[in-house]
Image (cartoon, rainbow, N blue to C red; front, side, top):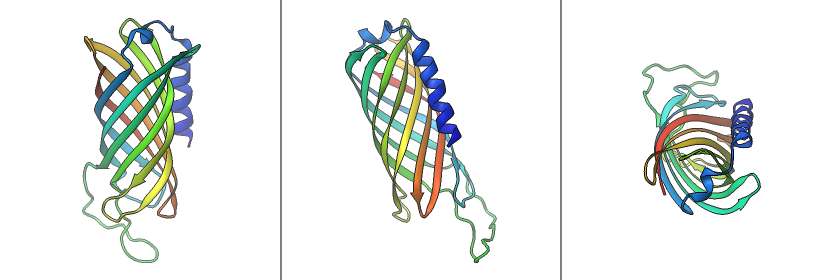
Length: 187
């Protein structure tokens, strides 16, 4: 839980200190895709490190005093990088399971603020739906995302992102996921 709180505070500080000039000239719709290193927290699992694929479709809704209001739809697929060959025994028998592969989709709302010519910071948060394809376990959770984007070519930006997901009840346990990603945004 402290990871998500720290992520939100850092992103809010970046957005709060940045001037609002660069984000105003951008087109109203953007799409981005990226890859991320992810790690799991909570629950009884092994192999918490993994990789993720992210996609985000965002719309600039309107200018507000703090920057530009953003609405977004996000999708994510995440899984383990390596699978353990050993078995850690549970007290009731059996092996501790791998951190689950998860597919998620979320609806996010937040702010974008220009920080320099061609660069912008975003802070987004909202509810998300998570599903483990192998066993069909499902859960609702909360996703928060902070990113910095710098224009590399006209209408193409490189994006560095931090994301935190909290699933209060996944397979009877509280699970959180953090990820650090790199991607491209097109608008």
